[in-house]
Structures are given as C-alpha cells and as structure tokens.
Image (cartoon, rainbow, N blue to C red; front, top):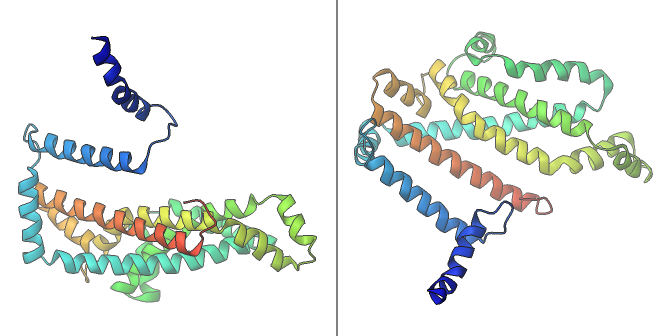
Length: 267
C-alpha cells in the first residue's frame, strides 16, 4: 500500500501543482489542459438536456450557411471592415493621445474620450451627410467607436509617464517634441499595441450593431441578426462560433505583429 502511494505521488503532485496559484506550468501542459477542456465541453454539449442543438446539428447548419448564404463572403467583408477600422482608428487615436501633451488640446481630447459612452444607433445620422451610406458609413461608425476607447486609454498612459523619464530626456538637450517622441511615444509603444489589440477584440461585438444598421454590403453581423430574427438557434450558434474563431485568429495575428515590431516589450 505504501509503495503504491509513493509511486502515485509524482502524478498527484504534478496535478496539485497545476492548481497552485502562480505556479509555473509548461506550455505543453497548458495545451493538453486546453484540449481536455474543449473536448469535455463538447461532450457535455452533446449529452446535454437538449435545450440547444447538438454539435452535429450546428455543423450541418454551418455547412448549409456556407453553401446557401455565402457565409465566407460575409466573413471576408467583415474582416476587411475590421482591418480598415483598426488601422484608421489607431492612427487617429494615437495621434490625438500624443497631442494631449499640449495643454490647449487636452480639453478637446477629454470631450472626445467621453464620446465612448454614446450609442452607435444614434450616431449614424451624423456620419451619413458627410460620408454617405454603405461601406463608408459602416467604417466611419466603427472607427468612431474604436477611436474613443483607444484614445481614452492612451491619453491616461501618456499622462502617466513619470517626470523622471521626461527629465532624463530633457537632460540630453532634446526639444520639447523630441521629449514627447522619446519618452511618451516610444515609452508607451507596448501599451499602445496592447490597447489596440484589446479594442480590436471588443470591436467584434460592435460589428454586429454597425452591420445591422447598414446592411447594404452584408457582413457576418447582418447574417447573425437575420438568424436571430428567425430564431434559428443552430444558425446563431454557428455564426457565433465563426465570430469566436475569427476573433481569436485576429488576436493571434496582432500579437504576432507586436512581437515582430516591438520585440523588447512583454508579450
């Protein structure tokens, strides 16, 4: 009995250490745990009480939506919109955030940051006379939403750069704007990329509202609203899984870009 307990101790110890807070766990172990979790969730879903369609029913619905409803085309349209919005909102928001180092700009930037509380449903009427309808309007609404959130976070990050860091750059006899570039632009580059990644993930939730307001080009958000209107639960789950997969892929690609462009920052 004692020999059996002793023999099992390494396994039990490894299992116990996995649940220990802040314990070091290898990448291989994490991948195994993730795979077991996914398989367990699918198994529970399959043998559940029948409230939701089974994975097989969802898969059949997904195949049908690809062949009948052009799901891939809708997804590509949404991905294009998302990429365009990420690029434009990042340029606009980061430029404004770094301009907040100038006192006359702070009041305007505070007002723009507060616009993140506005609903997209009511903002479309302000963009239509300027950019028209269709793709330009969807892009404008999504860029507006993402810009306000990136701006709010990065404005705070820029203002939190310590006086010691600013004084160090000043001691090198740099001009005021060179101080901004060295200490507040380069110094917050890692946080800026993280903010863009997080906001881009959040934008997938906003995408449904935007594509629901402007349906001329379709998009996966418009397709989801159509399935929801007809209460097609299998179709809703299928589209949501596509949302989830696309979001995870986008997040991974952006983090890969961060590792290439900013290798000195933490992952």
